[in-house]
Image (cartoon, rainbow, N blue to C red):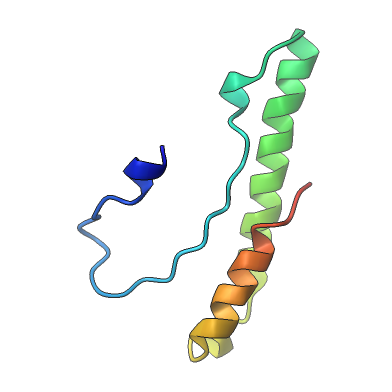
Length: 81
């Protein structure tokens, strides 16, 4: 999956800012139905928390400070639900 994430995308030209927001793949969960459901719910909640945090960033300010934006995005990557 990591290699596919690094491929060139036609919509992204020029320098881009990247941050890895890894989440355990719930499709690989095992156990009871309840445990598998919990794995999917955990992944969903983690992604939702990270997306909400990203959307709450002051992007109008951070767009002029790439280092601060990268730091904020990396901090968001540590959020769990």
